[in-house]
Image 1 (cartoon, rainbow, N blue to C red):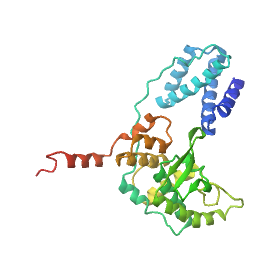
Image 2 (image 1 turned 90 degrees about the vertical axis):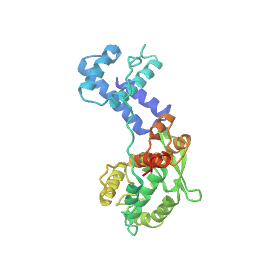
Image 3 (image 1 turned 60 degrees about the vertical axis):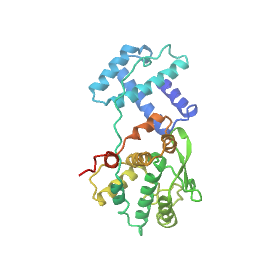
Image 4 (image 1 turned 90 degrees about the horizontal axis):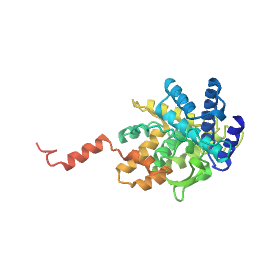
Amino acid sequence: MHSYKDSFMEYLQIEKNASPLTIKHYGRDIDEFYTFLHAEGTAIENCDYSTVRVFLTKQYEAGYARKTVSRKVSSLRSFFKYLERENWFDSNPFANVSLPKAEAPIPNFFYEQELDQLFQVSDLTDPLGQRNQALLELLYGTGIRVSECVQLKTGDLDFSLNTALVLGKGRKERYVPFGKSASQALRTYMEDGRLDLASKHKDPVRTLFLNARGGPLTADGIRLILNKMVKEAALTVDVHPHKLRHTFATHMLNEGADMRSVQELLGHEHLSSTQIYTHVTKDRLRNVYMNSHPRANKR
C-alpha cells in the first residue's frame, strides 16, 4: 500500500505539478482508506465495489458531510485510476461510485457599509496597522486566495501597472490588477511599516506580509488579524479570509462585470465555480424593485 501511495505522490508532484497542499490532502485520504482496509482485514488488492460501499457507509455513520465524503471519493478514484494506468490493478473500485452533489451554499459576503467600518479601524501610523490596512485592501481589491496572499513576494507587485503576479492552484500564474486604494495602502506599508517589521528579523524575508517579529505572515495569522479588525469595528459578522474573496466577486458582478472576466481574476479553472456568485444582495434587489416597478413608489 505504501509503495503504491509513494508512487502516486511522486506522480502528483512531478507529472501533475500539484501544490503541496493538494498532495497533502490526497495523502491523508489514502491513509484513511488504508486504515479502514486494515480494520476490515482486507488487502488493497482485494478491494472491490462492495468494499467501497462499506467504506462510504462508515463515513456517513461517522458524521462526515456529503461534501467531505465526495472529496475523499474523488481522491481515491484518482488514486486507483493511477494504479490502473500503471497496470498494477485491473479495475478501479471507485469508478462507478457516484454521489449526488449537495446544493452549493450562497457565499457569505460583506455589505459595503460593513467594509467601510473595517477600513476605518487600522492605526495608519503604526507598522502593524499599515500592514493590516494593506492586507485588507489587497484581499478585497483583488479577490486572491489567502494561500496566494501568503506566498506573495515584494517583487511580485508592479506599481507602474498596479498588478500583482499571483501563484494560484496547480502552480498557475496570473496577473491580477489592484486599484488606487490598494496601491496607496501597499506603498505606505512597504515604504514604512514593512521596513520596521523586517528590522526585527535576523534574516531577510522576501514575502510581502510580515508578522510582528518580522517573519512571514501565515494563513492563520491573517485569520487572527481579520477577526481582530472585525471586533474593533464592532461588527457582529463571521469573518474569514475567503469572505473577502466572496465579497470581491459579488461586488464585481453586481456592478456589471462579465462572468468570464471575474473567472479569470479569481483564477477559477471552470466557469461553474464563478457562477455561484451571480446571486444579488437584498439591497440591490430592493433598489431594482423600487426603481422599476410602476407602483413601487406610488402613495
